[in-house]
Structure formats: C-alpha cells, structure tokens
Amino acid sequence: MLFFYTQVMKNFLVPGKNARMARVNHIMGVLAWFSSYSCIIPLLILDAFLWQFQNIYFRIMEIPLIDRKKYVILDRYKLGKLTWWQRLNCFYCEYANGIVWYAKAVVNQMELYSCAIKHELHPLGQEHQKDFFEREKFE
Image (cartoon, rainbow, N blue to C red; front, side):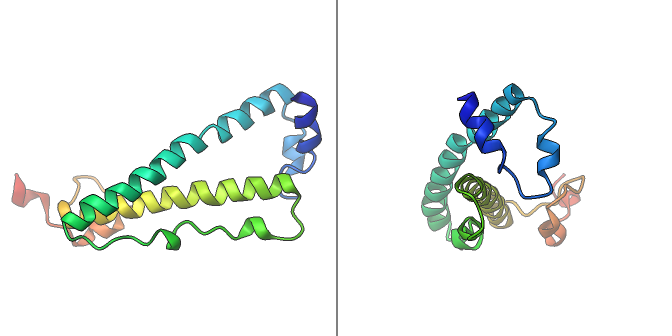
C-alpha cells in the first residue's frame, strides 16, 4: 500500500501545489487519503436520502423539486492532461461538492416553503431568508 501511495503521490495534485505535498509524511498522507475517501459512504447515503426526501416530502407538500443536475456537475475529470489518479480525485471532488451544494439547495427549498421565519442571527449562506417573516411576530 505504501509503495502504491508513494508512486501515486508524484501526480497527486494540480501542478504548483505538489511542493506542499513533499512535506507530508507518507504515513500521514495515507491517513489523510483514507480520511478523505472514507467520506464517500456518507455522501452516497446523503444522495439517496435527498432523492427519497424530495420525491416523497416535496411531492406531498407540493414544493417544487430541485434539479440535481444543476448542482452535481461532473466535467473536470474528463480533462485530457490528467493522470488516472488526478481524474479520480477530480471526480470525487466534483461529486462531493455537488452533493453538498445540492443538499443545501434542497434544505433551503424546504425551509422556504415550510418555515419562512428569520433567524435571530444571520447565518452565512442563508441570504434567501431576507424575505422571511420577522421572528417577533411569532414570539
């Protein structure tokens, strides 16, 4: 495993960022790799739960569905000058970021139609709440 990892690390990241990887101990690099790629399981489960949530809750409550294709965009891994390892990393990164963006959009849509009351504080990424009801009306 360590030999495989050492060979792959030479082309691990985008050129220019490899200098930082040279300082990473190989054992720690394997740990980082495992930590990163083990997240695929919860991401796949999240993807499945988002699908069922939209197709049951959103349809019953007549909430417009969020189009997954607008958030999960898989195109960078197809670039011709990437090694197979860089392609895998790009695909994983695109999928992971897309699923998280998609989850945020689904939850924002649910909040918009199910609980349109402003927070006391203004959380980052919740700009859609500017048109929500003031919380004082509900206290």
